Image (cartoon, rainbow, N blue to C red; front, side):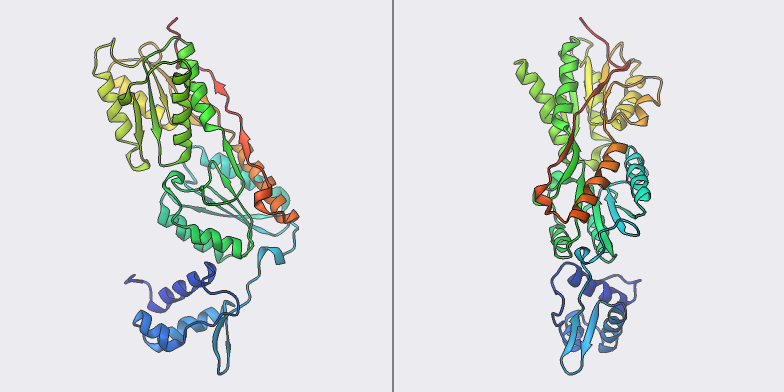
Length: 370
């Protein structure tokens, strides 16, 4: 609580709200006294009284004369009418306006609109602290359910307490693209390992042997795509050079893979890769600039496969061979599954994941060598 611009009583309100929404204090639990809170946060009793008064007015707290201040009974999702008309559904994604995310969001939004429900949207910008802020903000709303894309899923879940708070408030939720391993929720995702396998297997079948792969591994999508890529080589008992499997983080996506490709292309023609597989189409398009600057062309000098079949796959003069992502269908299917959790009130663990079969979309960025 060191924000110099936000009034102290507002900071204290937010802190006490976090106690409530993360179930540190449950309905009818007594809060510490005004004096205790004032000492703990080095604030005046007047500041504490103002924060508690606002929370009482907002319905989060109630006072009992001579006994203290208590957490009010909160309305859980189970208390609300199961009809979707008028309900609020939250959605937290890593991005909103970039890449394939607008298409996924449109799928969710159109499906909710048909049901008479409204969408409350938040973005984490692929940052764990912002995910925490988004979850806390959502917990302040009268949500009937939540659709969540985890942020850097392979790096763990520091916001686990907020998922426990969702459980405590009986708010059903589903996850997109991947899940945190410590969260028991149905997930809608592409079979990323099979997608990586099919991309590598296709390049091998087209006669390529010197193939480089680029994978963003702070999310499980990239980890699984890399596993599938390597499995295709193992099945053929064909080794992969360690420096041709490039792993990078979200923060490195505009530097590390591009620099690695630059180094590969500096080699003599017989020592550089004849094909590359990219974590997604966004990276593949960036790679095209590196290839052009070298005076090389796709696919004559270097074949290329992307992932997601995004708008970028056909946005340049080179139309990318890529692995399809369901996008709109994922959005509408997420709403369908979430509505079943809400209306049928069935435990999340009893629902199976929705796993989409990856399909290879053949275009002109791959050239056969045999």
